Image (cartoon, rainbow, N blue to C red; front, top):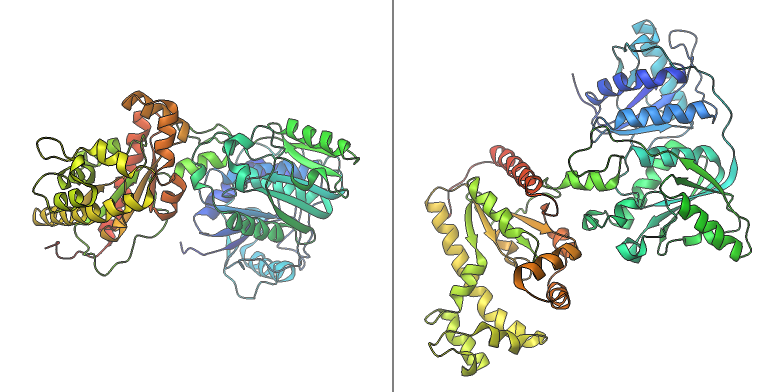
Length: 545
């Protein structure tokens, strides 16, 4: 079956039937639509009857349950971008390229005509779009279809979170806000200092537990990207609400000073944060906000070391080993051997990753070992280093005492640069020699294991940068245990190096050794398998000479 970049799925079943119908409908739609899948709910509509008029279900408890069922079903299809529409009469951000309806909607011919008419009336879709009928579903009987009590309405509603890589729980949370807000929704998006773990203990926002976990914060998307995705989703879902999206620089944001707010939406995890907001509001002479609580969504497909609830933290873990950005396109690099530059800070586990890659067939180049060779008597760099830093750095046998040399450059950026300007080009020369050896041996993949890969601008020698990252606290523990340093000395060492965030910004692939060795092994094997797939699709070329 052909695939389409976006689609509109029309579901006409009673809301109580959606928990059983959603899974089958979304599973089939996921095989057709590769981008946003908009869902139009119109319970009881007969698509094989008179010309359909678009309508939206009332904001009642049954609708909220149906939304929970739809977004929970969507979680089974990683990457499926479901947007359940709560309003109509507007153009969608990604206009649908195919129309879909549940197979139980009626006779195929009239239903296709009605689908096109409905899509045109509700969202301005052009005539002639492909219209497909899904096969329908079987399952347990529908739940009772009573709409239940209407949801409360508030003029102005507040919500906050990281909103990193919008997932089903975010979408349910935001949809509930859209149902509650009659005029304005204030959305606080964590940014800056608020993303630091120390700031997260008292957050009054529903989606920041992943930040508090301190895991893979480097992979959180920039504020501008998260805010843009948020706005697109919200305007698609309910265009009649005014959206005020602001960066959060402290645990409370404008929720404690905005006199027009009437409600704050929280989860069971952050109810105490909402109560803290109210305490501050009362101190500021404002009325307390109503707390509207949304239940957390379980992730039935969570993996080892992932949270049981749907979370951004789990999504970030699933990015490990995958290609985050395209490989470098450098005409000076031959396609074979394919060169991976592996980098990471002290305690990151970079060496263990390199060893595993070597076991799987990569040709390893240890830049640190080459660095030691660069200081040996007789090497081109040896005399230049002695001339620059004096004979007092020499041992009796003529070798360079690297501890004495290190003391001369520590804390002196100018002298450090003088040293690296001598040594790094020599190491790079030896690296190129080793790459040529690998090419002559017919090796397909070379891994350059280099802690200073990015600082030395050696990324020009590689096709992809792979970065090993680790939380600072774990790195400190490892350095103390491995090298016998004090915690303070370990932190000084880490803070003299490039940060993990800086490495991630330049990396094609990110890996993390925080968990058990088995988890790291699987990450590396996943990265290797995906690399092999990329290489199998790339044109072959002559080896390096």
